[in-house]
Length: 71
Length: 187
Image (tube, rainbow over all chains, first blue to last red; front, side):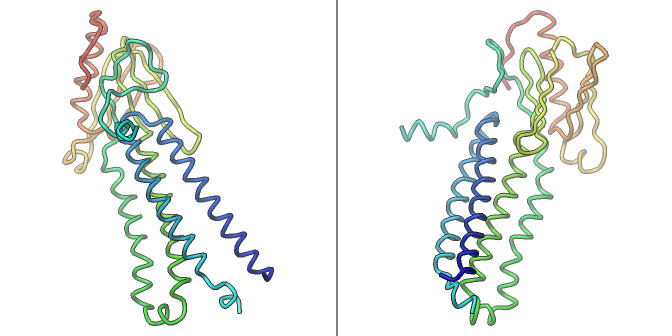
């Protein structure tokens, strides 16, 4: 695997870690500090959307042909 | 178990951290939803951007970069998803809780940065409602200013929906607390 391909994979991994870090912070705040039912509903919708978007982006990234893009 | 999980999303008695024994929530106030309309409509407009780019550069994208374009569009939507729920989080966590004993104002300033102020109900001396402008008048929202008996700073709750009703309810709770009546039905 060329060095640039490893670098792209590392950048994408970091981006996903940042995404899930921010997602965790939002979920934590909504469920821990939210009063009433509205924050829990927002947290559930957010979690479903985050999982779906992450799944789609992971599949799209796996299908990317990095070697042809670099060349 | 599954039924129990879904019960989370049913309307229930409002409880909160630091709630004292025999303390009942009378009002749970958040800013008028109108404050969300501008940022959320901006997010909606930003969400249209990849679609517009796809339509404008359709032939070039389909011929060469379809997979790459879809991937970056997905990353873009992930960012918008985080930003929009950050806005919703800030909206839901900035609230005022009126109980039969005190008024608690929670101000969320960002991730892991919040202020909690409280005011005992018997200290309330005067409540003023301020509705300025066309939109607040039409949409029935305004500022509720609670003046206390001591030299403490006054509490200002900004952009509250139906401020007149809020004032009436708080005054009713305060007069009942001063008269020694224990409970007020939650509303």
